[in-house]
Amino acid sequence: MDMKKFLLLLLLPFFLVTGCADKEHSLRHDVALSFDSERIAYTIAGEGETTLIFIHGWSCDARYWQKQIPVFEKNYRVISLDLAGHGHSSLSRNNYTMLSFAHDVRAIVEKERIDRAVLIGHSMGGAVIAETARLIPEKVLGIVGVDTLQNVAERPPQSVIDNMVVPFETDFTNATQNFVATMFPEGTDPQLMNWIREDMSSAPKTIALSAFRNYLGRYVTGEAALVFNDIEIPVISINAELWPTSPEENRKYIKDYQLYYIKGTGHFPMLEKPAEFDMLLKKAIHSLETKKNRNI
Image 1 (tube, rainbow, N blue to C red):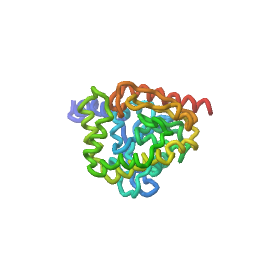
Image 2 (image 1 turned 30 degrees about the horizontal axis):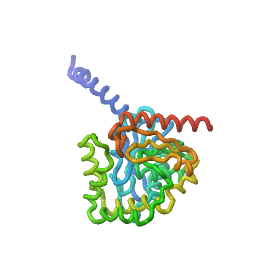
Image 3 (image 1 turned 90 degrees about the vertical axis):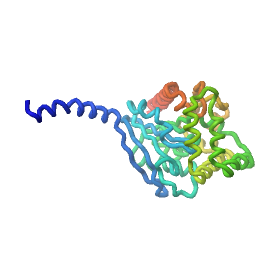
Image 4 (image 1 turned 120 degrees about the vertical axis):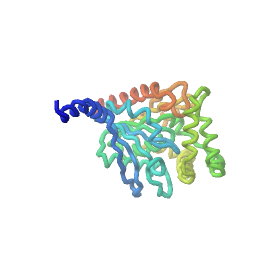
């Protein structure tokens, strides 16, 4: 056997294995320009008729969905993104509002020519997906909030929000770490808790406070509930039991609302109990796709 054939036989299994791996777990990284020219970083994996778009919460980024991407890319096209001012996206915006974040999502939807999406938003991301659904209703099957939308009808006075913000303005790092510490039940993996505490408290203070004030301010003005006047698609919450959810209050404003509880987790169920969370998310997506198919 000559040397060329010998090398080919030696390397062929390697090419076959790596070729299969790339096909099964291929990722594409890209950037979309939002309405104000902010560069929105995102990642695409998998293929499917329905696209799942994962939107992170306050002072987080796309990494908070790291457990879900390998699971859902098998049957769907999956997009995870960094909102403006977060992760790998640019941070030149003057005001970080829920509507501006919704335009970030819209920019990706338009660039990728998506016409059948399920929006999944964690915490503050629940307000973002609601605004996005209002912007592009014809492209969204439904929205899934993750430990969010506990009571869209709640109307705290502005003074409560102002008092909440004071510690973050004084010492952002310490206030954020203390805030995050309240988001977990006893028995949570300490390594996970520490990572989230350190990660969220390292966010840019000015951007975090801008988003924080806008997000909470929507409850003061009533916009947190009023946004759903323009939303006809189904809304599902996958919520922990750490804080109470009021489904009946939500149904006064949300035309089609379902609540799934996940037990034994705090504010980050997708990281704390990913297997249980993924089962509930699959159930939610199936419900949304079934309703859409019935209406076709």
